[in-house]
Amino acid sequence: MTTLLLAEHDGKLLSEQTARTLAAAAKLGAPVHVLVAGAGVASIAEAASRLDGVAKVLVADDAAYAHQLAEPLSALLVSLAPNYDALLAPSTANGKSVMPRVAALLDVMQISDVIAIDGTTFQRPTYAGNAIETVTSSDPKLVVTVRGSAFKPVGEGAASAPVEAVAAAGDPVLSRFIKEELDAAERPELTSARIVVSGGRALGSKEKFEELILPLADKLGAAVGASRAAVDAGYAPNDWQVGQTGKMVAPDLYIAAGISGAIQHVAGISDSRVIVAINKDEEAPIFQLADYGLVGDIFTILPELKDKL
Amino acid sequence: MKVLVAVKRVVDYNVAVRVKQDGTGVELDNVKMSMNPFDEIAVEEAVRLKEAGKASEIVAVSVGPQKATETLRTALAMGADRAILVKTDAKVEPLAVAKLLKTVVAEEAPDLVILGKQAIDDDSNQTGQMLAALLGWSQGVFASKVETGEGMLTVTREVDGGLQTVELKLPAIVTADLRLNEPRYASLPNIMKAKKKPIAEKTPEDCGVDIAPRLTVLKTEAPKKRGGGVKLASVDELIEKLKTEAGVL
Ligand SMILES: Cc1cc2nc3c(=O)[nH]c(=O)nc-3n(C[C@H](O)[C@H](O)[C@H](O)COP(=O)(O)OP(=O)(O)OC[C@H]3O[C@@H](n4cnc5c(N)ncnc54)[C@H](O)[C@@H]3O)c2cc1C
Ligand SMILES: Nc1ncnc2c1ncn2[C@@H]1O[C@H](COP(=O)(O)O)[C@@H](O)[C@H]1O
Image (cartoon, each protein chain N blue to C red):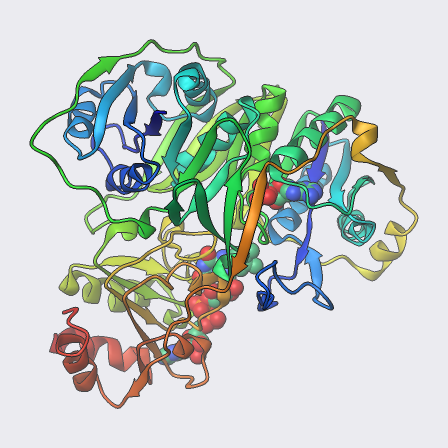
C-alpha cells in the first residue's frame, strides 16, 4: 500500500496546497510518495522532501511538464500508477484538469473534492455544499482530489526524504502551451490566507472595488475575494471568485462586503471561522450565516473600518 | 466542423436543496429541474460557432431519464439541430457518462465536443476530462474563450493564478466555464420549431456500456449549520468584537 501525491507548484515554488493534501494522504495510513513534475524543478523537489510524512520524492524533470498540461501529465501518472494504490492531488485548476483523465485511463471513478477521510470512507460536498456525501469506492485503485481548505498543512520535519528521478512518459503532443496571464501575487493567496476581504456587485465599478476593498485588505494583510457578479462585471479578476465554482476558502476571518449570500457564494465560505457581513439590506441571506453583521452602506462603512483598524 | 454538446438535467440552481431526513439523499420530489447552467453555456458556444459559419451541425446529447428530453428540447430551442437521449433511470457516474458519450462520438464523429465544466448536482468536474482520456483527444477545460483555426482551437482557460491559453489539436474536448458567454433565452418561435426537431433514443445496453456505479454512497447529510450571529450597531463595536470575542484581529 503506497500513495502517490501530485505536487502543486508554479514552476518556482511548491504550493501550500501540497502540504494540505499531504495531511489528507496521511489519513490513508500508507507511505506517501510525492511526484514533482515540471521543468527545472530540483528546488521544488527539495522543498517537498522536507515536508512531514513524505517517504520519497519522485522528480520528472522534462519540458513536457513545464506548464502542467493534462495530456502529458496524465500519461506520466498512469505510467507510475502500477506501483500505487491511491493517487491524490489537490482540487486546484491543475489537479481538477489532470486527475479525472488519470482516473479514466485507469478505469476508476475519481472521488472529487474530498473534505474528510476516515480509513476507506471519504466525505465530499455535493449540491454546492448543501449535501455532504460519505462514499466508499469499489475500484482497485483510488483517484482522489482533495479540498485543501479542509485540511491543515503538514509541517516541515528535520529529516528530508530521498529524491529520485523518474523517466518522462512520452508526450502525446495533443495540445500546446501558448501563454499565461497571471496576477502579480503581491497579496496572500486566497485559499490559504488567514483573512479574506471580498467585495460584491454593490461596489458598482472596478475603481470603487480598488478604492474600497484593496486598502482594507492590505491593512489587514488579507487576500482579496469577489462574488461572481463582481467578477462578471469586471470589478475583479476571475481567479478572485469565491464559491461553488470559484475558490473555496476557510480563513479565520471572512469579510463579505456588498454580497447578498447566494448559495453558490456561500458554498465557498462556510468553513470560515468568523464571517462578517456588511450589507444595506437587513434581509440579505448572508446575515443568516454571518457571525457579525453590520447593516449599512459599504461606501461609508468600509473606509471607516479601514481607518479605525 | 461538427459539434457535439453534452447536457445534463439537474436541480435548478435557484432551488435550496434539502437533505432527506433518513440520510439516503436529497429531496427531489416536486423540485424544479433545469439544464445544468454550464451546459447552457456549452450549447450557446456551439450555436455561436454555427452562426459564425464555423460549425456545420450541432448534436445535443443527454444521459438520463425520459424527462431529460425536456432538457434536450431546450438545447434544440437554443439552436442545436438534433438530439440523442441515452435513456436510463439509474444514477450514472461521470466515468460511465464518459463511456456512453464515447460510443456516441464513435457514431457521430464530431470534431469538437463541448461539455459544462461541472454538473451542479454532483459537483464532480470530471466528465469532459474523462471523455478526452477515453478518446485520446486534447482537452481545454474551464474555457473562458474559444477561437477556431485550421485543424486546431485556441482556448483560454480560467486557472488558479489567472488565465492560460493553449492550442488544441482537433478533434478536441472543451469544457465551459461561467465567463465563456452569456447563454440566450430561446425565443417562442424557436421553442415551437424545436418541437419538430428529432430526438433519437437509445439505452446504455444499446451502447454496450456497463453503468454500474463504482462509488457507494453510505449516507448523505446536511452540512454543519452555522449559528447565524448578531447584528452590530457600529464599526467600533465590530472591531471590539473581532478583537476580544472572536480573537481574529
Ligand atoms: C452555475 C452557477 C455558479 C455560480 N457560482 C458562483 C460562485 O462560485 N461564486 C459566486 O459568488 N457566485 C456564483 N454564482 C452566482 C450567484 O448565484 C449570485 O448571482 C452571485 O453570488 C451574486 O453576487 P453578489 O452577491 O455580489 O450580487 P447581488 O446578489 O446583486 O448582491 C448585491 C448585494 O449588495 C447589497 N448592496 C447594494 N448596495 C449596497 C451598499 N451601498 N452597501 C451595502 N450593501 C449594498 C445588496 O443589498 C445585495 O445584497 C453562480 C451562479 C450559477 C448559476
Ligand atoms: N448525465 C449526463 N448527461 C449529459 N451530459 C452530462 C451528464 N453528466 C455530466 N454531463 C456533462 O459533463 C459535464 C460535467 O459533469 P460532472 O463531471 O458530473 O461535473 C456536465 O456539465 C455535462 O456537460
